Image (cartoon, rainbow, N blue to C red; front, side, top):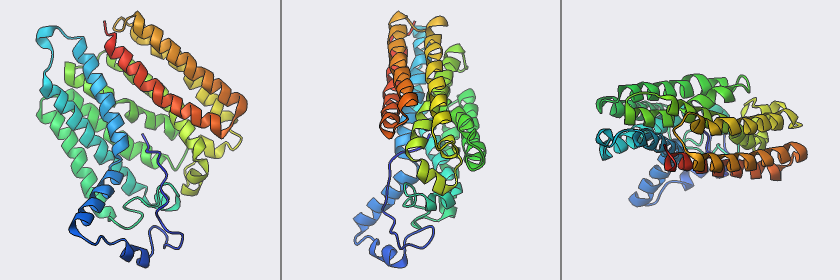
Length: 325
């Protein structure tokens, strides 16, 4: 999923796609330590570390959910946990780097992304591609070499969908958001497959929850930054629907869908009543905010809905693991 921090370090007088020659000269680090720090900062930006952290957490929760359902003698040890974090983390960083290589043109036109390493000229597209491919291959390789072939295949599909399908389609039609929600929902499936070697009903239930959650979450982001997305040439629903009516109705529908989808783990018998109660309360609160957004259509309510989505997901996932049956 997309990072949401706004950066405006690129100067107004820069050439298209990057800072001016004068700005580049003044940005040269004055010491080896500063050069290393600058390079690490660029690496963090290129690989979207905050998104990677979220992906790794959801993969770990999928792993914990799968491990919790196994007999004591069959429970995987710390090595499985390490493989899950390493494989999904590397793959996510690689996909993020490749995404930024492909979108370097639109990124250079958007205020929130124009200072990223590639559009700002601090890193070449070739080097970004090589790094992205290396990290992606390493992520899949870690899972495969450790013997988790199902997880490795799911990881590979996640990368391909994100880079080869979702990323180019973002500039074609707003329905790309639906496609992008698929790779965004697969990390817990990877973790579950590492723990169990299979993809069971519990994994698909978490996938459905993650998929439905991403829709109002990202639509809130798109509404908050719709002007910037328009400059970048991304026809998201928030861009082609300036009134917000369709955008907010869709958010309301997906928030409503989270209620039955959130209850599915209880229906399927792998989460207890404590989970059901917590997930229902969280879902109702999220739905109420979405309903208020439809009625008011304000930036304040859109921002509140976005922050509510950040609270909803970890609450429900942690409850699912804590009250596993």
